[in-house]
Image (cartoon, rainbow, N blue to C red; front, side, top):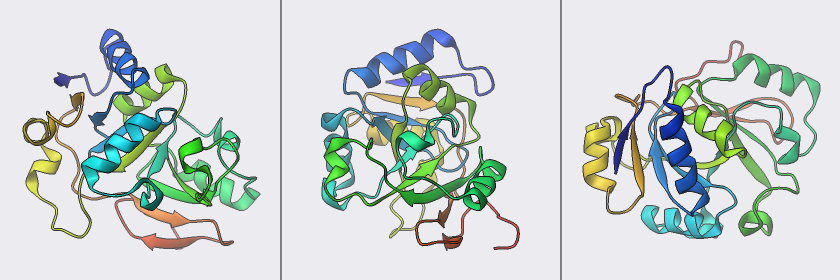
Length: 206
């Protein structure tokens, strides 16, 4: 299903429909402030396993990120963050960054035996943040493109994404053309700030 949403003021009835899908083990493809993402409710092992099959990876090898509405529930999913790191995150987010932090005790059980760190995103995108706010918990997220391949044009065109993935996912959200540059990945798990992938976001001084 291809579902078009207003990019500035997403329609509440459509957001509720998407959240019902997520609560029923559904998978969605949605816009972020970088590339389109594929995601599900972090509380749905069935949906997480489906995404792993779509991407051709094992759950234990998956390197997914969690998308938050804001940083207010960060401590539920991560260990304590030092003040300098938190200040950098507050300044950078919402924005095109993925911050790698030590995982806390509330991460999904499906990851708990091996997941020592998690990637945290707060995209500057009204559609995905509205979904998360209505859902009441983070989305488990992966970008659509395979970083080992060249980025293809279909990955930022929702109609072409729908043509490719409509049999594999439940909803493809049309939020307009997406970006072709991924988020900047910032590793904060070893002390200090380490840019391990330079993407769309820029942190001054690093």
